[in-house]
View (tube, rainbow, N blue to C red):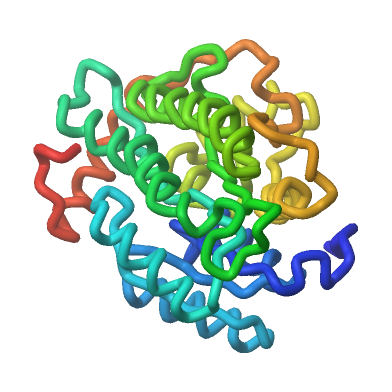
Length: 295
């Protein structure tokens, strides 16, 4: 689809994205780059980073990838420092790294719950905390009168209640709270705008293909006000709006991009199908060397 924004709306800006090498995160990376920004991507998988950076380079977008885990403060500090050293400044931080899997609460271990909290909530705060000195007005490469902007990718699960995603629901509720609190404090003190985006079901993403296969989505489509899945492009366009001057007076808001689905009553999901998915996730995790205790 053709963007409604001018191609140079982010010219001269530098953006760092966690989880920016695949899925929604990569589409945000791509569209920020197409609209003039230089892109740094942080992720744990070198092959994903290399593929994403190569794709951006093929379109003439300045880009670099850094291996790192948002749960580790030392990684956050290193990647942020390296980004500013490479591009000279930082204007935009997008926290898109996340963990998720379907599992009934009775089958979820405390370690599994904690793992998602650590990635989504603690990881988001850690990245924001370490980025402050680069994003605040007068920071490295920045004007003395203006600050940068932060986007935290959230969800709508916790607006009502979520089937078999108690860990993610709790983590994203914390992310929304982090967004509001930092917007209040850092908007006042440092002219940094902090906003969130809460995607609904987005087509061609792991969130749909792995967490909501057809036997589940067929029921969900009947409950969608727009009767269709969203696109990764929709989330990227919302991001451009919020980080550009078009959203210069928007702060502390989590923009819901789900076609109005969260307004509907949550439907019961087939428990046996969810258990089957949960076992499949556990098997994939064992195959890549993640201990069962972490699930």
